[in-house]
Length: 193
Image 1 (cartoon, rainbow, N blue to C red):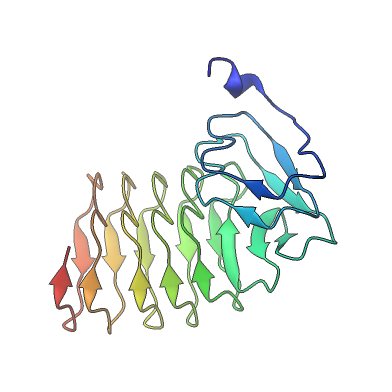
Image 2 (tube, rainbow, N blue to C red):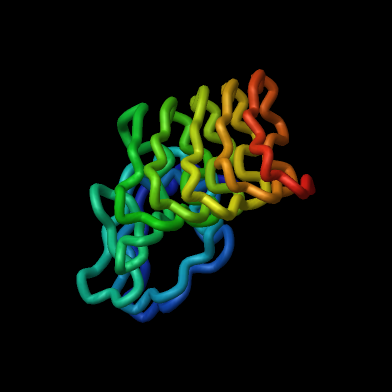
């Protein structure tokens, strides 16, 4: 829809319970408040929101919370969305996070370094899609599940260290990674999709 990029602010009505696929795609939103009744958010609801710097969540919301502008599940065990324009080139995933959700860092162009701690077990579909500034990444051995298109179009990505116990390489994991020079694949690998 023409003009969406100019939308800087909007208020989600208090009676909204779900934010669907691509709901805010392409909008110029800077901040977004998630009301108390929202209990479902599609992973791609905020794709290509290049100006988004922060989420806030109503304290009464039973499903979600925000810490330092980043959207998590209420228990803070799943990082759901990192705002695409959040300041800082380096980010370390919090130690209590066990899963990085689908599309969680998608289109975060300012990131150059992402640190994933031991203890994370899942990286969702397109979790780092089009993070064009990331040069290298090490996936800890605790990760047992990688999503499709995980690093798709990470154009600056040069080096990837995959977890030692990984048995399957998902579809499109390195699609569009034109700078990739080294991908350390584990001996445990059995399936390449």
